[in-house]
Length: 60
Image 1 (cartoon, rainbow, N blue to C red):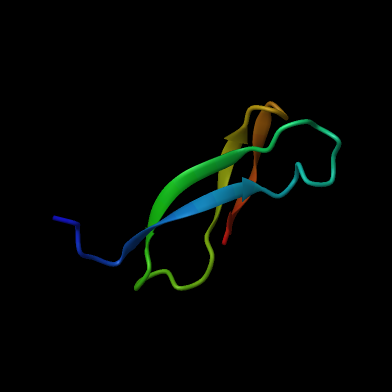
Image 2 (image 1 turned 45 degrees about the vertical axis):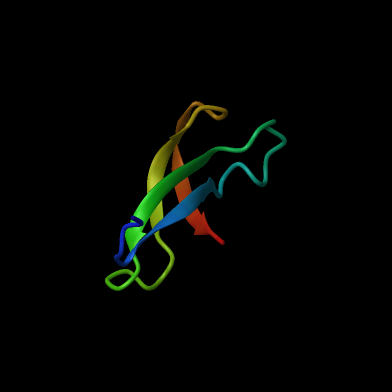
């Protein structure tokens, strides 16, 4: 049976890498509680292409 609940999978994408000409795109998959967190999440994650910690925002 499928799980029932408010948790959904979201994709986080690096915002700092878009302006540069660095190849590749840093993306992470995580889950969030849709009921408690209605707005888009923003986390600091490691970007292996830029070799530093950057801000990653939720994309649709």
